[in-house]
Length: 456
Image 1: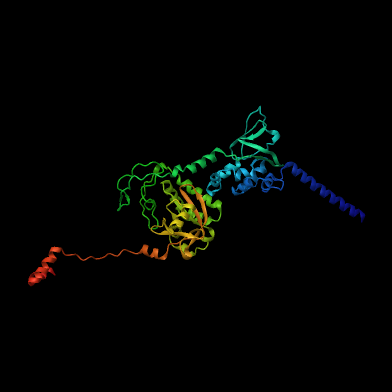
Image 2 (image 1 turned 180 degrees about the vertical axis):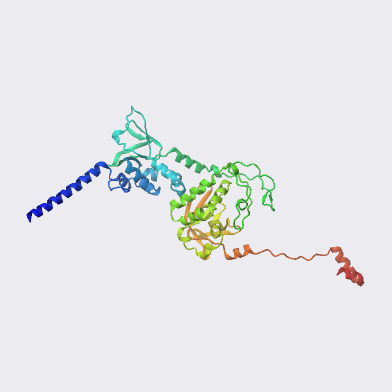
């Protein structure tokens, strides 16, 4: 019996020895446990960043949807993170620039800025260049370049001083604390371009164009206007055949020269809707169920501006089969949610605060959508067919504005009835001339029955 026990123990010990040996061999082949696992361990530099004194930077990384990208980078190699102190992102940063970074439409700029703070290799304070070697160039995770230097006893990365060298060190990377935010040139140029608003600068009117009512086209060529000027014809004249819309094209300021890249802007705002979350149904209708995305891109290329009231997924789920089964129903619904003006949350709220109730034109001509102030926000429509401004300024690029609402809007029933009424022709009796009436009265006074018969 003892021999069986000892034999069993020997076999068990041999099995454990083989298991440990195989595990050691696997670790020797792959020294980084996070590599290829799809997950990071608790000792990763990313976990240290999310649970560190650099809370503002960690919050921006989460908002920029960069966690998966950084996990992949950590799985391939060590990284070095230059983390600005919280005060640099809270009080020292220009509020207008911070607002620009946090707008959903500027997600790419935020990602570029954050990856500008990360080097895809390990650079500790003991590896910093000396004063004699000058500035040393390193490529960032976003394929930009930063320069490390050492002067007057200060370690520098571009124009920012390293105030906490090797603040957090982990097996897969380290974090240096820096005094200020690093801003790549491309992001600064995007911000300057948005702030100057050169692409939507107003121009003085030079006389209204003459339009032929029979063809809905210009009687004479539109005067030459600089790029960025408003189109000569109303937007209804520029649209393709649609619900109650004229098919005549409009020669806007873009034309064949494409001063505005409408197609790229429409793709960008749809991509932003998908990233924002909660508006997949609206994006799906624009891309897959209709040709509205192409139509919107052409309009923006011609110089028109648009505001999209985008119902969220919860609101779209309440649409019935009857509302979607009629021919052209998706187009009709979306057309009613597009305003041919550039409106933001601030401009719409200021309008309803000042004027009470405001009616905006829509691309579902001639229907308008009403807006008023309610509960400190903007409410569109009335009664059960109303919706609140739910997610303001999801996308604002100067040409297209996207405002999230919590309901699907429909025109009022009386507006629909009035729009389909056929005009009734009135039969006007021919009116006799004034001289003939006077002559008939005179003949009647003299009793000339023969001539009176001609007056009747």
